[in-house]
Image (cartoon, rainbow, N blue to C red; front, side):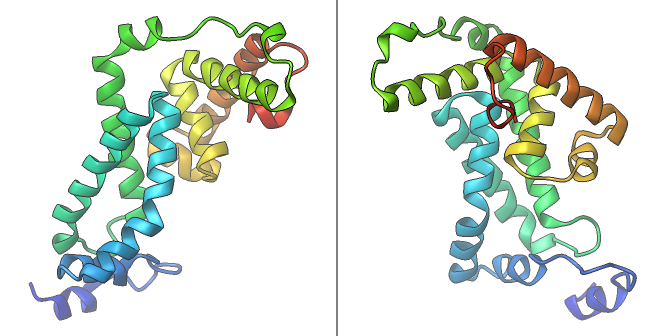
Amino acid sequence: MTRETLKRTRPLDQEDGDPDAALIERVGQADPAAVRTLVARKLPRVLALAARLLGDRNEAEDVAQETFMRAWKQAPHWREGEARFDTWLHRVALNLCYDRLRAHRETLVDEIPDEADPQAAPDAELETRSRGEQVRTALAALPARQREALVLTYYQELSNLEAAGLMGISVDALESLLARARRSLRAQLGPGASSKEIS
């Protein structure tokens, strides 16, 4: 099937189409400028997603690299209308994170640091850094599905409908995961935890 035939057979009822479709087509044609644009546009979010789910920057970089390797392989075959490219990219990154979490489940639990000593951070900047580490530690201690729900909705800024779709669950199930995750984080961070920290 030629590209022209593909274009003619695309669904006409798509709301806005895929905003990345033209870029992915150029990536599929090995256009170096398109590859650089795609990386600049998508890498920060993929890295942030992986880092928050895995709690390890190096592992997150490995996941991002593998995600983009799969994107390059898929680009020549991408068909607009099957799924939005951004949704597909998030799904690939999530699956790679799941694989790593399954492989390192015991290791991740062992690496959770002890609570920081509040006396050890007299400087405001150090206190902020310490609190950030407490939030990251509390996030890492959540069950994987609760952590995923929080990361997708709050950090990746996906709608509940988009996040539920990526996770393969209903919006009600997603909201239940979010409620349990918030309760767990409040319990771990204490009564003084702000809603900004928790979300």
